[in-house]
Amino acid sequence: MSPDDMFRELITTDSLVDTGRTARKPVAAWLDELIYKTEQLPRNRTRSLGEFSSIQNNFSLITMLIDGTEAARNECAAQIEHAVQEGFPGEAMQPWVNLARLDRIDGKARAAARKLSAVRRLAECGRVTLTGTRFGSDGADRRFAASVYASENFYAALAQSDALATHFRRVERQLGRKEHPLLAEQQVVAGTLTGDFDMVNAGLSNRAWFMDARTRLAGMFYRAAWSWRQGVPEPVDRLAVELLRQSSPKAAERMLDHVVLRLVYRGGLLALQRGDRERGIALLERTRHYATRLSDAEYVARAGARLETLGEASAWQVAAARSGYRSFRGVPSFAEGRQDQGIATRIDKLKELVHTIRRNVPLRTYASVEA
Image (cartoon, rainbow, N blue to C red; front, side):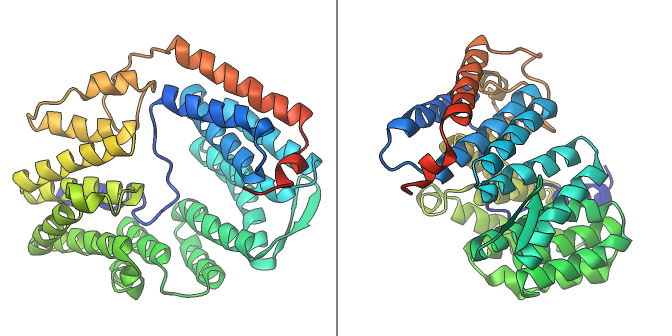
C-alpha cells in the first residue's frame, strides 16, 4: 500500500467527532436488555415516549446487523406508520433518517437524497411533511435535523465534487457557524479525497477543534496524520504519547465513550504507519481494553485482528464468534455464517413485544408521563 493509500485509509474511515455512535454490544446481552425494557414499559409508571422510540431504533439496528437492510427497512417503515397514525409524527424523524442510511448502504443514492431533503426542510424551515402528515418542530428537533443532515448528506456530496460547495454552505447556515468540529472534519476528509489541499488546510485550522477534550484529540490526530503524509513524523509521536496518557485505566474512567475508543484505535494505526511498533501495539491493547469496558464486540475484534497480524497473542475470533455477529466490516471472517439459535429466539421475542405495543398501545400512553 502506497503512503497516499495508507493516508486515505487513516483519514476517511469512521468520523472522530460523531458522538451518536452505538456500541456493537454482544447481541444476546443487547437483546436481553431491550426485551427487559420493553416488558417494563406497560407497567412502568414513568412511561416514556422516548424510551419506546429508543427501543425501536435499537431493534431496527440489530435487525440490520443480523438480518440485513430489507428486514430493517420494514421495521423502520412500521415505526414511522405507527408514530404518524398515533399523532406523534416527530417520533418518525429518527426512523426516517435510518431509512435514508439504509438507502445509502444499499447504493440507492437518489432515494437517500429524497429522504434527506425532508430532513433539510425541517432543519431550515421548522416544518416538514412526512408520509402525508405536516408537522412543526421545536428548537431541539431542528438542531437534531441540522446535525443529521450535515452528517448524512456529506456522503452523497462526496460522490459529486460540485455538490460539496453547496453542502458546506448549507451546513454552515444550518449549524449557525463556521467553527464547528463536524464541518472541520468533513473539510479534511473531502479535501483528502478530492486532492484539494486548501480545503484540508481550512479544516485543520478551524478553531472548533479546541471546543472540548475529545475534539482537541480528534484535531490532534488529523494534524498528525497530515504532517506524517508531508514527511514530518514528530506530531505522530506527540499524539501517541497523549493518547496513551488519556487512555490510561484511571483517565479512561473519566472519558469512557465511543469517540475516545475510535480515537485510540486510529491513533494506534497511525503510530504503526509511522513505524512506532511499541506505541502502536500499546494503543491497540488500550483499544481492546476500552472496547471491552464499553461491551463493543466490533472494536474488540478490530483491535485483536490487528494485534494478531503483529504477532501478538489474541483470541479475538473466539470472542467475535461468541458475540453473535456473523461479520464486521474490514475484519477477517470469524463466524463462518453461523446463526445462534438463542439469538434468533430473542429477536423473535423482542419483535413480538414491539409489534404488540404498536398494535395495541397508543403512543400517547407513553407520552403521558415523561421519565
